[in-house]
Length: 148
Image (tube, rainbow, N blue to C red; front, side, top):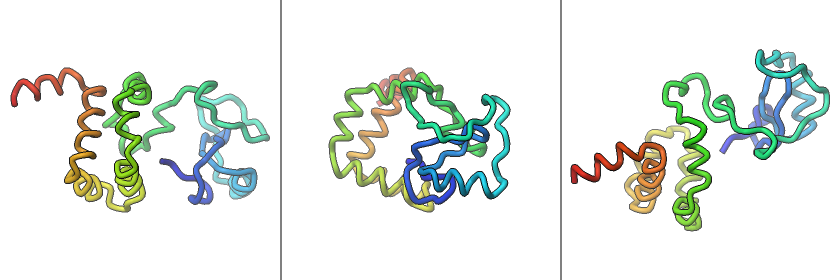
């Protein structure tokens, strides 16, 4: 889960039309505009002064929304990410409050690699990860099943 790019406290609901930073409120938008860190993003329309809500129905995800520059090499195609969102099997797993708590602890951990390693000790988290991989890399998962 992302946090506001200005205050780092709330979940962002808006995106700056100029530089695409995500922010949570009008006060954060104003603070962002006042600190001179806003630079026009090359692929966007001219900046609009009023904040615009981020709506998944109106604006599809972009890789920039999901990944920073350091993780671009591990990109998952947008179509596959949308398949994750449409998966009934994943939705069913995510009804489990223990799994949701595990996910939040991984997301909020400073050392994400260590947090994932610890979470992978939980069978429920492993089941969730396997289900995600079946959607993202189905051919590879079938090959792994054949090896067992």
